[in-house]
Length: 385
Ligand code: PLP
Image (cartoon, rainbow, N blue to C red; front, side):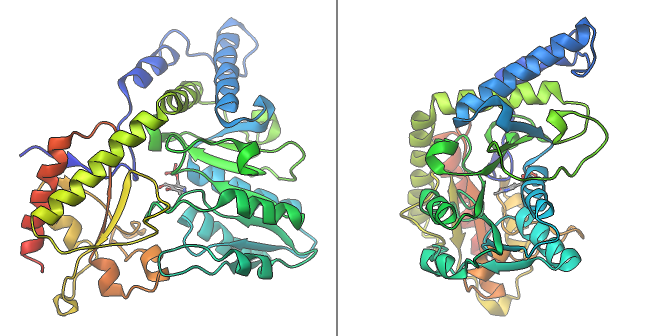
């Protein structure tokens, strides 16, 4: 049985041209970018070129771009780094219950350890944010940061970032945008979006896992979290990962160069999958804001009777047995799948959230794979519905 990978919002395969781009930095160009000798300078030049390319792709200055080991690290740095810059003063941060755990758990940690006040902006049953509620929640001289993702990793919803940034700016509040899911799918220009901080992760757009970046607008107060050297201009101590930094910049450049073409192709895969599911007679409902969504993410609920007492991973395991890889909520530390916090926050019951799956496509999926995946969905669901 050939396996079909439809979990591209979790991670994507590394593109062959990205592997080729990295290889010299594992071989003859292996130097430490912080060394003064020729080996070091070769690595340094490559890293700074990558930083310039990355900055250009997001409309920033190279001095505003810092490499990090992941989207999670970059989100932690944005949120904790800004909060630490205001320690000793009242600190209030506004976010959304629909954010990634990298944001939510950083906020929860700040609340527990430092008494930082946290509020979540209200949303409707499709995950659309209520911007009037956001305005109401801003506390003069206390709200330091608004952190809202560009696009939701489970639903695909695209948030009205420019409007949110304008609200933040009008109130003198910093704005962080987690753009991990939108990078390589939507144009990301920090000036147009109005972000003071923005975070991305390479493995969502065909670079390797373990490399991300954070944009920090010049003058933004942000403490470092890692100490032990002057790397990344004192923002992040660690010997630089030159190969992965180069890969990150190249992958974003490649993705942006054919954004419209890739999105059109991925959208046609998504629509073909939905048509095939309907043709197979599979009953489903779509979750999220269908008018404003990324083309590559689908979130589907199936009317599996609650009497089945579905464990969260039963649906995924049934699909995996059919050779189809998809996902639902995030894996918790024990390895068991919890129901998605996003679907629960939309008002779904636990059984409903457990009877849902996120299906996500990439340019490497083929049309016939998608039709075959729908057939296998029908097989798997026959046993559960
Ligand atoms: N933020 C969002 C929206 C994500 O989807 C993810 C990963 O799924 C992350 C942050 C974390 O990125 P990483 O996997 O690079 O740690």
